[in-house]
Image (cartoon, rainbow, N blue to C red; front, top):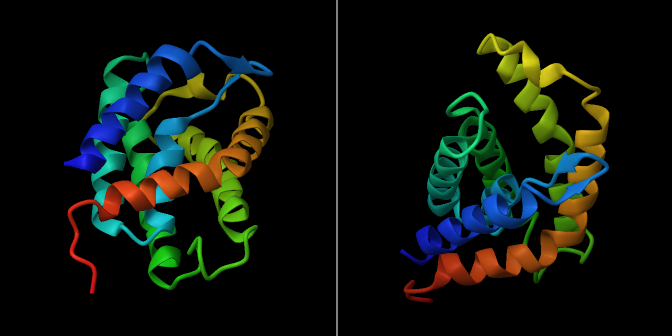
Length: 164
């Protein structure tokens, strides 16, 4: 419940603030960072759920191919959750720089995956400019935002859970 509520807030912030705030002409995609962060803290189920919800709600308000944002978010959430389950992205036991680097790699790969998946959806307009600025800006933004968003993800995914 808490993860769904935070996911809807993330989508609202993405649509109302970050979609109009462009860095070097690129939109920073919080709707990809949030599920990735949930995966890094080891919350596979909530990460996949938030990826689906955030992607679908984002795509209903944009002119992108429907479901493509959700697909990329699902891939990011699942891939990062494999690392999170192994404790690689753990905020407490891993080095302080591990979570930002992993998030930065996700921010680097997500736009490329989005454009390639768009080609399979026969949408060739996604490749209008170089993908490199999208990759670089999202990677840098994910590096900067990774630790605070991961802390929020850990809190949201553990609310209501009984600790042993």
